[in-house]
Image (cartoon, rainbow, N blue to C red; front, side):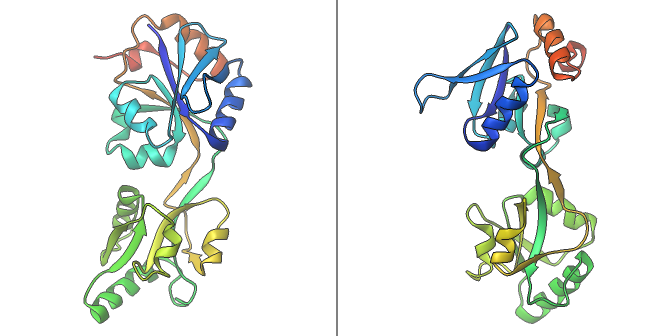
Length: 239
């Protein structure tokens, strides 16, 4: 049985993932032509490299089509409704850090916290006759966060492009988005609400609970040693 490892297919995240595994004795490399998403693993027998977009990896893990996957912890939590039933979080990898935050225009001088946002949302609805709009790609995480903090008078609007620009384009009044430095938010005259982020994300190694782990014990044992994680057929094998 071959263990399939899914990693991001391009960019800085792919490079950092390759470096992380290389530091632990596993060499990952792209093979074939530049536009072919094929790869190889050296250092452990019985492993196959699968190159995917970071957003595809949570679904492939949940479906059991790959055994291990590297992607942002935010993507797993957003994509998989009951993510802990589908995947096991093996280890954070120390790169790809970004925070999922809520931001409002800097001109909203009386809105600095979630409590302020709740009051502003109620006032907005009373004045305009519709709910305050929050543009985001992360509907599940944002909804759970706002529900936990008692914010009710809002609606989420989908944004798959430049989320920060939705306020300028008058399609939203606030945004919830991933940020590393906050520079893009400041450039668009937005301020982050005070308090902990909705989620602190980073690249994380996950294991699929529904994948077939039978006949993988030798590779799993070596991987556990190399990567410093616990890979157990009792935990990940199909029931």
